Image 1: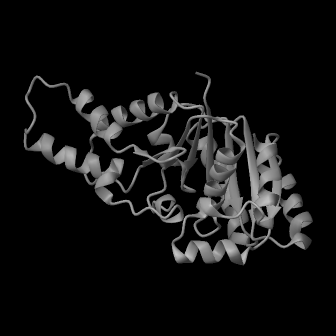
Image 2 (image 1 turned 30 degrees about the horizontal axis):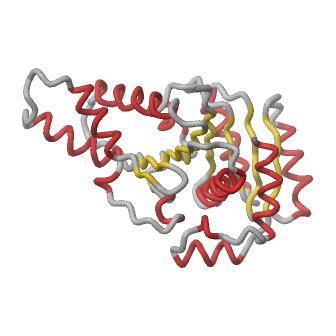
Length: 259
């Protein structure tokens, strides 16, 4: 299967996870992809909160691997049992099946100590898992080194979310630097400006042009939306946002260009 992988990144607090969930809503509504996998690679694990689902640490890959490493150190497995098979089974067990998509929560770091063999198996399993879906969307922290350690498959598109602040512009530049440092190859890099006033669009366009990256494009700007803010703070499911919501209508046009 020729599956697509799209990663969302950006500085904390810019609404990255919110726009990813609304992209997920767009994918579900449009029915362009039958099998969808969401990987929450951000240690803050915000996706569960945004879809009204409480996810415990032991339901994440990080939680499973922490527990598994303790069991390995205590020699709780038969010596002839392949560790790769054990790890694969634990990761597949963390896969959360929703109505229209599957969710894999990476969770926090697996703890102290070097377990390179375990981490390599985790990467291979996630790579294999993503190939079984039509599209995989990843909520990645701004520090893409974490993302590079977790997946080796090339991602087609990187979507960077920014807000109207100088810090966010610096984060875009830093993310672009990191993509080179850790050899992440993106076919396209898109910027979506969230909670952004229309009169600052030209300023942002000029800043992006000055970065002089051929495959870097400003995909669109999204206004602040009190309705979306209220859903987020109340802990309701953002996927239930009305299709008539004006911001969602704007995002549908933006996401249609992305797909």
